[in-house]
Image 1 (cartoon, rainbow, N blue to C red):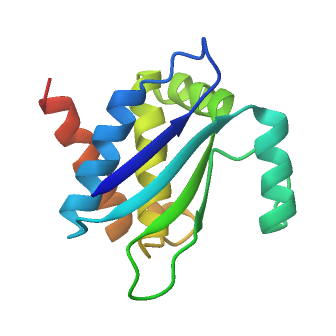
Image 2 (spheres, one colour):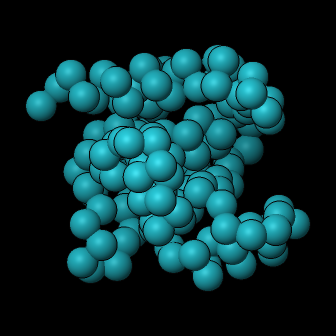
Length: 143
């Protein structure tokens, strides 16, 4: 069984069902029939704090993910998405906010599943980004 928990403050307009559908699709496409993920949407102050505390990063980021399972176990993990940052990125890219929220949720899930990407311009050419965009584009095609 795949379980996806979506945590977001009321009134934020987070597309909970779309997020669940995207992560279920991501997990199934990667061959997982059992998994449990939590996706939590936070503001700039909290995402900055998490970024600094757990990754030693400086400043607001868009998504953080933490794998909580051991090798050979069903995937288990937490994804934190900077809600305001996601909206800024969507605006800058000319994308719909819901699509960017889905993109970041899938991105975080793929990190939990073991994917990684290089930094810099070659980042968008990585296998991880190819899989991410296939899931996001596939959801666009399904009502």
